Image 1: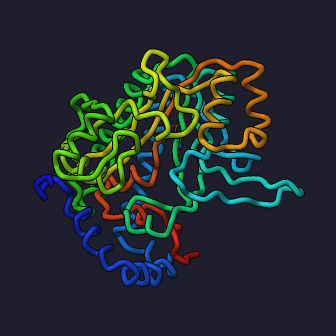
Image 2: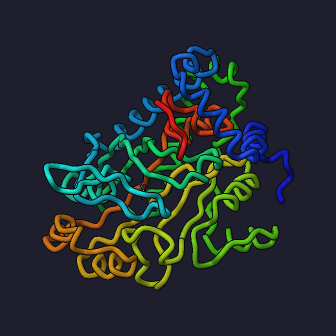
Length: 349
Ligand code: ASN
């Protein structure tokens, strides 16, 4: 285990409180039933102001790097299945079963192939399992800034998201110092290059701490918090194993079984910030990956049709806005980063 001082006290307090399980959740449900009261507090107003400043810093950064903002898709015949077991929301769209976007990944590939560098500020819905309410970092409804560029490598995308986060932290430190003071948040220094470690290195680090982690799978949620607590600055985990992520993360042609992808992780126990990758874009390869991940290619008609026509290779990432807010403000749980949060399994307006 890391020294406890490396985990931010508010994360440690949340972990402690959430041990009460359903008692904690009932208490939360009571609180969330009155959003007008919660939002009146000085603390909530400071959090939402930091979020607004961060969001405009993100737009400023991406716009100045040649990305154009597109309006996000909300509904579609199919959506991202690579969401770690979370359920999708199906609505009746004139008799067709349509999905509420769990992520805009399929549309990002279409858009970046045609337009070059694009982003969506994209609302996503994922019916996470109820136990995700106790991780402090899951909401059933959240917003991610979903970025994609054609012809980019995943190394270039990591440089981009690193630059973006550094910019946001600098702007927030400069423009929101009063809010950070109200929140008692002393943001860690993010100016040094972010360390990059491979997935297999991350797994061996966890194992050496006695934490169960598997070479063939994603890093488990609790393992990620522990790893995150070992670092003083954000860091990347790269090169996830084939089968552990969405079918669209590109397999390295020279290293079969290894994906050209990454997660960006916040320090101090705050966990995942962003995930990204180079994409599979060739029809045959995508078809094979879809099938291997248990998806029905029939459902991906427009997408496979697009790939059969041919698209450019693209790469990108998505950064969660509520998780970013949680990190910037030093919040115990991500629910504080929304006016009316949808915490998995918790009834709320
Ligand atoms: N936005 C992520 C990405 O670009 C995908 C996701 O949200 N599942 O890789």
